[in-house]
Amino acid sequence: MSEARYFDALRDSLVSLDFEGVSRTAEAAMRAGVPPLKAVSEGLAVGLRIVGEKFESKEYFLSELVVAAEVMREGMSIIQPYIKGEIGMSTGGAKCKVVLATVQGDNHDIGKSLVGTLLRASGFDVLDLGVDVPTASIVEAVREKKPHILGLSALLTVTMPEMGIIIKELTTTGLRGGVKVIVGGSPVTKEFAEKIGADYRGADAVDGVNKCNDWVSRSG
Image (cartoon, rainbow, N blue to C red):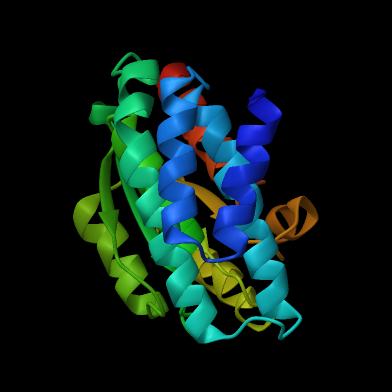
């Protein structure tokens, strides 16, 4: 089977909420030597975007999102050990603290959890605050933990402005200069990220993690 067919099968398994299919395909892909990060970025992550689009269009509902998150975790549980072998600890990520949160009013966890998994595999010290996190809690976590990077997620357009509110609060409290802010989620655009003063918009989980690695390598 070609790499592309593995990617398509991973994508389709996630979209169809197929636990057995994603497990079987992930195992077969890793045995075949498919690059694990590509399996994530061109397979699972594509499926994740489609699930998000189906939710936005009301074709999928919260129950499907919950199941999709579990299917994603099933696939990642198989692929993650191979990611560790591929990227190892060469980035020096363990020296870098990251705080992640889905903003207030938004209960979506899939993309953020994937980012956290990949960051930990890269050696980052990750604190995941969860979903529907109040701005005050995020700012307090930045104050207490002093992370190098803050990752904010939103899957709903109505919750995206919370990202800007958080960045303004960090600026007001004098915390903004000490932390890089990366934002993500299917409706979040590069233009929106620039407008609210974020440092970067991750196009997907792998792109976001690559940017975090780039920041670490430049600071090191």
